[in-house]
Image 1 (cartoon, rainbow, N blue to C red):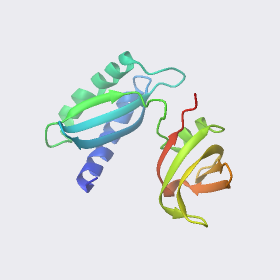
Image 2: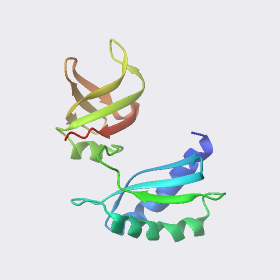
Image 3: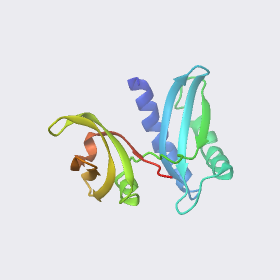
Image 4: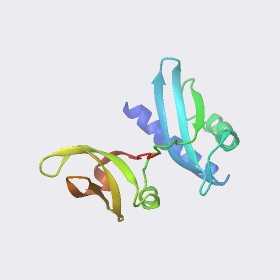
Length: 159
């Protein structure tokens, strides 16, 4: 992702997070990507204690659409999409990890950690602190991974 797209994501997050929170929803994640149909700003929302449906997505979309137009943070055409995070929801903040403690997670780090070096961890989230999470990987033991080293983390859906 280009630095320009990262800057846009940061500014959009700062603008949209309080607007979505005012609607009783949470902005979990967002991405600004170029796809074959053009640029897409995709917001992933959650509703604490409930399932996100079409109505919540419409509410969030209305809450941010005009503000995005007024602030003019994106210098070209784009499509706004608002959706639920799905079953394999992203984990970005310490609070997200704390909410799924005891469940299966998949974590990818920016670079290799530990001996032998590895970047991918799939296991049970057993501990969460302000600086790190501990994942118990079957057959390999527990790994305490600093939050700053996590490139991507998701809840791993188990039927």
